[in-house]
Length: 258
Image (tube, rainbow, N blue to C red; front, side, top):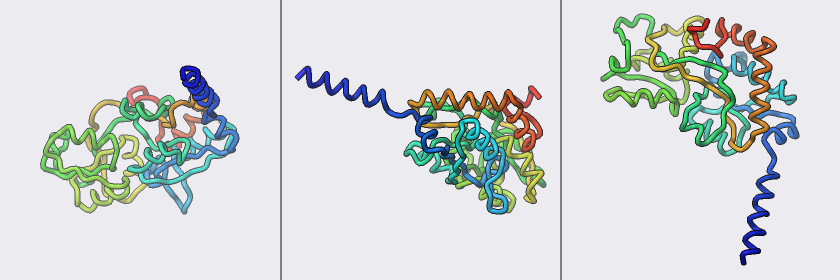
């Protein structure tokens, strides 16, 4: 009996030890399967029916460093991490905040953006929303399943409205159906500059947040290679070039460091 258990245990260990690292799978397949929303400008969105944006360019550059092709899938944010957990894609690159809770389920790359939550309001807004406390009794729009929902819920009395993506709640904000929205501070200059929606930046909220690239746990070779690819893009100037194209600065560094 003991010998049988020992043999079974050793067999299990052998199977676990020889399980392919995600890097081997990606290399053998020749593609890196990447999930993005596809509706989250300037990070990832469609223009003339083609995916573009900061994270799309970054993902392509990372895949090239890994020696494979980038293969994109689009998914609503609310289902994206569940899809990653189910193995539908290899990575998600969609401004995923690195949180302790998410680290229980996924491993992350080194951070590639540093930003903060910030309110978005209509351009003709005269009410001075300086904090979430000022939104008590008001309607606040944000993406379903985002960190921002957790932030908003720390203050009671706010009527939180969740949406599949930023396009929907920004449209509702412009139409006056909600009083403010909450999203990444990096998103707002693009909205103001590139869209025709009558919106502007509101007050910044909370601490600086770091976003990284999540993937399934237990893939040390993939993690090392992904971080090396990021570091190489930083070292050869490619990351800064892509970042400045979309944000006029290096978003891997805090705003105060610019």
